[in-house]
Length: 408
Image (cartoon, rainbow, N blue to C red; front, side):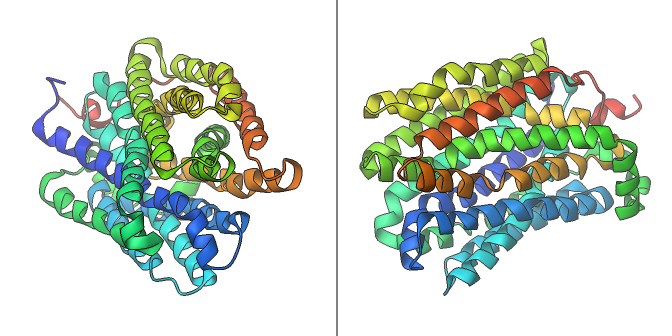
């Protein structure tokens, strides 16, 4: 990326790390699900509501932080989001009761909801258009990178610090605020429209959303399918390996590492290819390629076969996801780009927040507590849905934003 300046590199690094550490904090919940359930004297399905309330609160966070980003700037809003979700992650480790824990996870979801949309808009508005696909994949690779960090921390530290200690270690992302404050510039696109942005508010947002209501509904539907695609293959997967397959911590860790390496590779590769072949074509191809992998991923029994299938599945899932930061920002109306991508993304999250209880409940009720068929049913349905929604949607790869909007 020879035409990317040092400041632009700082933006990409900071936003990648913000999403990495956000996902790291989120997936600590997935790794401690069974331990926390035992501590609060309840079952796995009940504890999955901690995941649900986190996801359900993200639209509110995206709305609040998105308005702040459009009014006060991307950079200070990103700092506020990172600091708040770090503090709430730390506090989760001290929750005395299940009710307190659920409240803290809901508040964490609110803070988490602000990071992706603000970070994605800051990044996409700051880099040259020809690098948008590659950087989109790199930015979205932060999600499996955070999952990978959480995997390694769980393997190395769970025995020493316990499940509560993992949440306390989740306060470390707060240090990222210092880097953002010292090294990351404001979005040039926001600064070019700063007078209008500072006068923007809820009324302006609703006006723009209503004006583009068809696009908004479409974006929410797409992101609902995408969130089921991601959370349906990840949130309960560690529990699936240890509970249904009775795999050891070492074997489980190895499989999770493999699938997250695949996710990083898939996201960066597919997003880079989207710069040449188009966003829609890249997404549709990745989603459809997950279908032949699906039977092996859901029903394999041998640890090696499970690992290979998990690698293939995440290559496809996060391959499709890698294109989303660029595609959703390109589809977004410019005046509310700080709000629109994150808000529509997290509204999809809200609808898909039932995934954990849905999959676990189906397993408990119909499949003798085995997640294989719930996994297959959910993931197969949304893979086809993504292919149809995106395939018949709009391509906006060549839209101009950021520095491209500034006069020469």
